[in-house]
Image 1 (tube, rainbow, N blue to C red):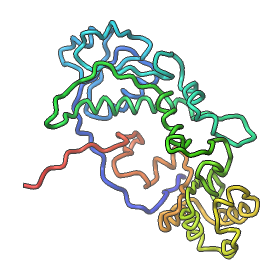
Image 2: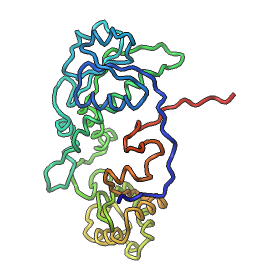
Image 3: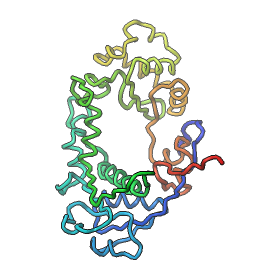
Image 4: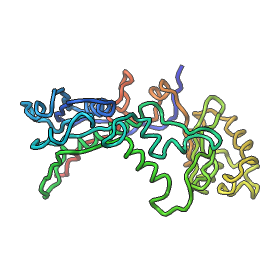
Length: 314
Protein backbone atom coordinates (compact mmCIF):
# COMPACT_ATOMS: atom_id res chain seq x y z
CA UNK A 1 0.00 0.00 0.00
CA UNK A 2 1.53 3.31 -1.02
CA UNK A 3 1.73 6.27 1.30
CA UNK A 4 -0.09 9.51 0.63
CA UNK A 5 2.82 11.84 1.23
CA UNK A 6 2.21 15.34 2.60
CA UNK A 7 -0.93 17.26 3.34
CA UNK A 8 0.15 20.16 1.14
CA UNK A 9 -2.55 21.37 -1.25
CA UNK A 10 -1.90 20.87 -4.94
CA UNK A 11 -1.30 23.79 -7.25
CA UNK A 12 -2.58 24.81 -10.63
CA UNK A 13 -3.74 22.25 -13.19
CA UNK A 14 -1.48 21.74 -16.18
CA UNK A 15 -2.76 22.83 -19.56
CA UNK A 16 -1.67 21.84 -23.06
CA UNK A 17 -2.58 24.73 -25.35
CA UNK A 18 0.11 24.20 -27.99
CA UNK A 19 -0.83 23.28 -31.53
CA UNK A 20 2.26 22.54 -33.59
CA UNK A 21 3.73 20.09 -36.06
CA UNK A 22 7.12 18.38 -35.79
CA UNK A 23 8.86 15.94 -38.12
CA UNK A 24 11.33 13.25 -37.01
CA UNK A 25 13.83 12.16 -39.67
CA UNK A 26 16.12 10.00 -37.52
CA UNK A 27 16.24 9.15 -33.86
CA UNK A 28 18.42 8.34 -30.90
CA UNK A 29 17.38 8.29 -27.25
CA UNK A 30 17.43 12.09 -26.94
CA UNK A 31 15.15 12.47 -29.98
CA UNK A 32 12.75 9.84 -28.64
CA UNK A 33 12.52 11.61 -25.28
CA UNK A 34 11.99 14.98 -27.00
CA UNK A 35 9.23 13.54 -29.19
CA UNK A 36 7.62 11.97 -26.13
CA UNK A 37 7.46 15.34 -24.36
CA UNK A 38 6.24 17.18 -27.45
CA UNK A 39 3.48 14.61 -27.91
CA UNK A 40 2.09 15.62 -24.52
CA UNK A 41 1.08 18.93 -26.06
CA UNK A 42 -1.39 19.19 -28.93
CA UNK A 43 1.55 18.86 -31.33
CA UNK A 44 1.54 16.23 -34.03
CA UNK A 45 4.70 14.15 -34.55
CA UNK A 46 5.27 12.58 -37.96
CA UNK A 47 8.12 10.57 -39.40
CA UNK A 48 9.92 11.47 -42.61
CA UNK A 49 12.62 9.52 -44.49
CA UNK A 50 14.83 12.56 -45.14
CA UNK A 51 15.23 16.28 -44.48
CA UNK A 52 13.99 16.98 -48.01
CA UNK A 53 10.82 14.94 -47.48
CA UNK A 54 10.20 16.62 -44.11
CA UNK A 55 10.57 20.08 -45.62
CA UNK A 56 8.10 19.20 -48.39
CA UNK A 57 5.36 17.93 -46.09
CA UNK A 58 2.00 19.47 -46.87
CA UNK A 59 1.73 20.68 -43.30
CA UNK A 60 4.97 22.59 -42.75
CA UNK A 61 6.79 21.43 -39.59
CA UNK A 62 7.63 23.90 -36.87
CA UNK A 63 10.97 22.08 -36.65
CA UNK A 64 12.65 18.90 -37.83
CA UNK A 65 14.19 16.59 -35.21
CA UNK A 66 17.23 14.46 -36.09
CA UNK A 67 19.86 12.31 -34.41
CA UNK A 68 23.00 14.41 -34.63
CA UNK A 69 25.28 11.96 -36.41
CA UNK A 70 22.82 11.04 -39.17
CA UNK A 71 22.42 14.33 -41.07
CA UNK A 72 25.01 16.64 -42.64
CA UNK A 73 25.03 20.41 -43.09
CA UNK A 74 24.77 19.84 -46.84
CA UNK A 75 21.38 18.18 -46.35
CA UNK A 76 19.94 21.17 -44.50
CA UNK A 77 21.32 23.77 -46.87
CA UNK A 78 18.44 25.78 -48.30
CA UNK A 79 15.94 24.40 -45.77
CA UNK A 80 13.88 27.32 -44.48
CA UNK A 81 12.94 25.78 -41.14
CA UNK A 82 14.86 24.87 -37.98
CA UNK A 83 16.52 21.46 -37.77
CA UNK A 84 17.31 20.38 -34.20
CA UNK A 85 20.29 18.02 -33.94
CA UNK A 86 20.20 15.83 -30.81
CA UNK A 87 23.40 14.27 -29.48
CA UNK A 88 23.27 11.57 -26.80
CA UNK A 89 26.94 12.38 -26.09
CA UNK A 90 28.63 15.49 -27.52
CA UNK A 91 28.17 17.55 -30.67
CA UNK A 92 29.99 15.83 -33.50
CA UNK A 93 30.66 12.68 -31.47
CA UNK A 94 28.37 9.65 -31.39
CA UNK A 95 28.06 7.98 -28.01
CA UNK A 96 25.74 7.48 -25.05
CA UNK A 97 24.63 9.48 -22.04
CA UNK A 98 26.93 7.56 -19.69
CA UNK A 99 29.86 9.09 -21.57
CA UNK A 100 28.34 12.56 -21.08
CA UNK A 101 28.05 11.92 -17.34
CA UNK A 102 31.67 10.80 -17.24
CA UNK A 103 33.37 13.59 -19.20
CA UNK A 104 31.25 16.46 -17.84
CA UNK A 105 32.61 16.19 -14.31
CA UNK A 106 29.30 14.96 -12.90
CA UNK A 107 30.31 11.33 -12.32
CA UNK A 108 33.47 12.36 -10.50
CA UNK A 109 31.51 13.87 -7.62
CA UNK A 110 28.87 11.16 -7.14
CA UNK A 111 29.44 8.91 -4.14
CA UNK A 112 31.81 8.73 -1.20
CA UNK A 113 35.41 9.92 -1.25
CA UNK A 114 36.78 6.39 -0.82
CA UNK A 115 34.53 4.85 -3.49
CA UNK A 116 34.64 4.75 -7.26
CA UNK A 117 32.88 7.54 -9.20
CA UNK A 118 29.16 7.05 -9.74
CA UNK A 119 26.94 7.55 -12.75
CA UNK A 120 23.59 9.21 -13.29
CA UNK A 121 20.59 6.85 -13.50
CA UNK A 122 20.10 5.12 -16.83
CA UNK A 123 19.34 7.46 -19.76
CA UNK A 124 19.04 10.56 -17.55
CA UNK A 125 21.59 12.51 -19.65
CA UNK A 126 19.61 11.70 -22.80
CA UNK A 127 16.41 12.70 -21.00
CA UNK A 128 17.94 16.08 -20.18
CA UNK A 129 18.92 16.54 -23.82
CA UNK A 130 15.39 15.55 -24.84
CA UNK A 131 13.59 17.99 -22.55
CA UNK A 132 16.01 20.83 -23.43
CA UNK A 133 15.48 20.16 -27.12
CA UNK A 134 11.71 19.92 -26.71
CA UNK A 135 11.71 23.25 -24.85
CA UNK A 136 13.71 24.84 -27.66
CA UNK A 137 11.29 23.40 -30.20
CA UNK A 138 8.32 24.86 -28.33
CA UNK A 139 10.13 28.18 -27.99
CA UNK A 140 10.19 28.47 -31.79
CA UNK A 141 6.43 28.97 -31.66
CA UNK A 142 6.62 32.26 -29.80
CA UNK A 143 7.20 35.52 -31.63
CA UNK A 144 8.92 38.47 -29.98
CA UNK A 145 6.65 41.51 -30.38
CA UNK A 146 8.05 44.44 -32.32
CA UNK A 147 11.12 42.45 -33.36
CA UNK A 148 12.04 40.94 -36.69
CA UNK A 149 11.86 37.17 -36.41
CA UNK A 150 15.13 35.50 -37.41
CA UNK A 151 14.67 31.74 -37.49
CA UNK A 152 17.77 29.55 -37.06
CA UNK A 153 18.12 26.61 -39.42
CA UNK A 154 20.38 24.50 -37.20
CA UNK A 155 20.23 23.95 -33.43
CA UNK A 156 22.51 21.44 -31.66
CA UNK A 157 21.63 19.99 -28.26
CA UNK A 158 24.00 17.61 -26.49
CA UNK A 159 23.84 15.77 -23.18
CA UNK A 160 27.52 16.48 -22.49
CA UNK A 161 27.13 20.25 -22.89
CA UNK A 162 24.11 20.30 -20.61
CA UNK A 163 25.77 18.25 -17.87
CA UNK A 164 29.00 20.25 -18.17
CA UNK A 165 26.99 23.45 -17.67
CA UNK A 166 25.38 21.92 -14.57
CA UNK A 167 28.78 20.84 -13.24
CA UNK A 168 30.25 24.29 -13.83
CA UNK A 169 27.46 25.89 -11.83
CA UNK A 170 27.89 23.41 -8.98
CA UNK A 171 31.69 23.71 -8.93
CA UNK A 172 31.55 27.43 -8.22
CA UNK A 173 34.17 28.13 -10.90
CA UNK A 174 31.91 30.72 -12.52
CA UNK A 175 31.84 32.66 -9.24
CA UNK A 176 35.54 32.40 -8.55
CA UNK A 177 35.11 29.95 -5.68
CA UNK A 178 38.66 28.74 -4.90
CA UNK A 179 37.62 25.29 -3.69
CA UNK A 180 37.30 22.00 -5.46
CA UNK A 181 34.24 19.87 -6.04
CA UNK A 182 34.67 16.24 -5.10
CA UNK A 183 33.01 13.11 -3.77
CA UNK A 184 32.50 13.58 -0.06
CA UNK A 185 29.61 11.40 1.08
CA UNK A 186 27.25 13.11 3.53
CA UNK A 187 28.87 16.55 3.51
CA UNK A 188 29.99 19.05 0.90
CA UNK A 189 33.31 20.21 2.29
CA UNK A 190 35.07 22.79 0.09
CA UNK A 191 31.97 23.62 -1.85
CA UNK A 192 29.77 25.90 0.20
CA UNK A 193 27.85 23.03 1.72
CA UNK A 194 27.29 22.38 5.39
CA UNK A 195 26.22 19.43 7.47
CA UNK A 196 24.00 17.54 6.73
CA UNK A 197 23.84 16.50 3.09
CA UNK A 198 22.78 13.15 1.69
CA UNK A 199 20.21 10.39 2.05
CA UNK A 200 19.41 9.28 5.58
CA UNK A 201 17.29 6.49 6.99
CA UNK A 202 14.23 7.45 9.02
CA UNK A 203 11.51 5.47 10.81
CA UNK A 204 9.87 4.06 7.68
CA UNK A 205 12.20 4.84 4.78
CA UNK A 206 14.70 7.46 3.70
CA UNK A 207 14.82 11.25 3.44
CA UNK A 208 17.03 13.53 1.38
CA UNK A 209 18.62 16.40 3.27
CA UNK A 210 20.69 19.19 1.74
CA UNK A 211 21.66 22.04 4.01
CA UNK A 212 23.41 24.96 2.31
CA UNK A 213 23.62 27.56 5.08
CA UNK A 214 23.52 28.18 8.82
CA UNK A 215 19.87 29.16 8.34
CA UNK A 216 19.13 25.72 6.85
CA UNK A 217 20.72 23.99 9.84
CA UNK A 218 18.72 26.13 12.26
CA UNK A 219 15.53 25.23 10.35
CA UNK A 220 16.36 21.52 10.62
CA UNK A 221 16.89 21.85 14.37
CA UNK A 222 13.60 23.74 14.62
CA UNK A 223 11.86 20.89 12.78
CA UNK A 224 13.29 18.58 15.47
CA UNK A 225 11.88 20.92 18.17
CA UNK A 226 15.38 22.14 19.08
CA UNK A 227 16.54 19.08 21.01
CA UNK A 228 18.71 19.47 24.09
CA UNK A 229 21.85 18.22 22.35
CA UNK A 230 21.61 21.04 19.79
CA UNK A 231 22.13 23.67 22.51
CA UNK A 232 25.83 22.81 22.79
CA UNK A 233 28.11 25.40 21.19
CA UNK A 234 29.81 22.69 19.15
CA UNK A 235 26.45 21.90 17.49
CA UNK A 236 25.68 25.44 16.35
CA UNK A 237 28.11 25.84 13.46
CA UNK A 238 27.19 23.57 10.53
CA UNK A 239 30.35 24.56 8.65
CA UNK A 240 32.50 23.14 11.45
CA UNK A 241 30.23 20.10 11.69
CA UNK A 242 30.82 19.38 8.00
CA UNK A 243 34.55 19.08 8.69
CA UNK A 244 33.95 16.43 11.37
CA UNK A 245 30.47 14.95 11.77
CA UNK A 246 31.47 12.12 14.13
CA UNK A 247 29.83 13.77 17.16
CA UNK A 248 26.70 15.22 15.57
CA UNK A 249 25.80 12.37 13.22
CA UNK A 250 24.49 9.95 15.91
CA UNK A 251 22.34 12.74 17.40
CA UNK A 252 21.02 13.74 13.99
CA UNK A 253 20.26 10.14 13.06
CA UNK A 254 18.41 9.59 16.35
CA UNK A 255 16.01 12.43 15.48
CA UNK A 256 15.27 10.89 12.09
CA UNK A 257 14.74 7.45 13.62
CA UNK A 258 11.83 8.84 15.68
CA UNK A 259 9.89 10.14 12.69
CA UNK A 260 8.25 8.85 9.51
CA UNK A 261 8.74 10.26 6.01
CA UNK A 262 5.35 11.98 6.17
CA UNK A 263 6.11 13.52 9.54
CA UNK A 264 9.50 14.76 8.40
CA UNK A 265 8.10 16.31 5.22
CA UNK A 266 5.34 18.10 7.12
CA UNK A 267 7.87 19.38 9.66
CA UNK A 268 10.20 20.46 6.86
CA UNK A 269 7.44 22.42 5.10
CA UNK A 270 6.36 24.01 8.38
CA UNK A 271 9.87 25.10 9.35
CA UNK A 272 11.45 25.71 5.97
CA UNK A 273 13.91 22.87 6.46
CA UNK A 274 15.63 21.30 3.40
CA UNK A 275 14.27 17.76 3.75
CA UNK A 276 12.15 15.59 1.47
CA UNK A 277 11.13 11.92 1.42
CA UNK A 278 12.75 9.44 -0.94
CA UNK A 279 9.73 8.01 -2.76
CA UNK A 280 9.41 4.90 -4.86
CA UNK A 281 7.74 5.29 -8.24
CA UNK A 282 4.33 4.06 -6.93
CA UNK A 283 4.61 6.39 -3.93
CA UNK A 284 5.45 9.34 -6.19
CA UNK A 285 2.41 8.60 -8.40
CA UNK A 286 0.01 8.46 -5.44
CA UNK A 287 1.47 11.36 -3.48
CA UNK A 288 -0.07 14.82 -3.24
CA UNK A 289 3.26 16.60 -3.64
CA UNK A 290 2.93 17.22 -7.37
CA UNK A 291 0.63 19.89 -8.73
CA UNK A 292 -2.86 18.99 -9.82
CA UNK A 293 -2.99 17.75 -13.39
CA UNK A 294 0.67 16.80 -13.72
CA UNK A 295 0.03 13.12 -13.00
CA UNK A 296 -2.92 11.57 -14.87
CA UNK A 297 -5.24 8.97 -13.37
CA UNK A 298 -3.38 6.20 -15.23
CA UNK A 299 -0.01 7.37 -13.88
CA UNK A 300 1.21 9.01 -17.10
CA UNK A 301 2.65 12.52 -16.89
CA UNK A 302 1.83 15.78 -18.58
CA UNK A 303 4.39 18.47 -19.41
CA UNK A 304 6.77 19.33 -16.55
CA UNK A 305 5.90 23.01 -16.99
CA UNK A 306 2.75 25.07 -17.57
CA UNK A 307 2.19 27.14 -20.71
CA UNK A 308 -0.74 29.52 -20.84
CA UNK A 309 -1.78 32.94 -22.03
CA UNK A 310 -3.29 35.28 -19.45
CA UNK A 311 -6.10 37.47 -20.72
CA UNK A 312 -5.73 41.21 -20.20
CA UNK A 313 -8.50 42.83 -18.21
CA UNK A 314 -10.91 44.75 -20.37
